[in-house]
Length: 295
Image 1 (cartoon, rainbow, N blue to C red):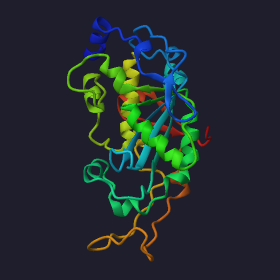
Image 2: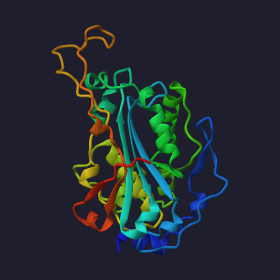
Image 3: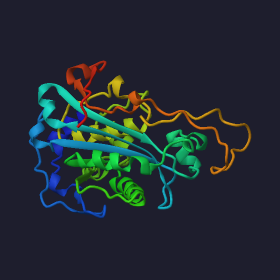
Image 4: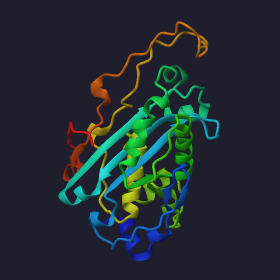
């Protein structure tokens, strides 16, 4: 038993009715959900019956932190919790990158690693707005760390594309983690350290952040096992276009004529179907079985 789980059992009694479970309204805002999730009984293994049937954990990267900034990428992972009892993790990934139409703040560019030359050769958010809404609408619960910031950006981008966030219950992992009153802040890294959710060195992408957010949520809901991210689910954005060689000197204006085109991703890269992962394999190297049927 991990030191965190032991302490959680003995000293913490987090009532999920007090956590930040909310329902997105039709305008993309938030209102209190009419029915809060009942607190599961402590257990050493996953208890799928106490969890929503489908969960989407997400993370985003942006050009900055202000309301005028734009979305750079979104990553999300959807799981079906009933499969946990059968030593399986059914997971469907989403990982997309966009041209934000503006230069990133240097601090944020350093964080996500996408420079202006690469981003200006990507597709617009509008091209994938329907796919994103459909992916989120497929879940009973949307989980994010610092939920208000991330859904605020996502809601503005969707509004600009003439779309709205689906009416789905949401959960802020940071708010739930704060209820434990642990030291070290409430960042995702801090929560992972305190809850013994490992962050392997190779996991540096937005998708990895979404996976770790899912891990924090499961730990907070007394799913004691930690599932490493299998190699088959570590990939760049599926719509990533390969930029041509970067010119020397200052970059030309974004609207300058004659800019060399980017290489389009292959059809295989765009396939983000379900994967079934054996949980027992995730104690070591994960084995991922691609399912071609999309849901």
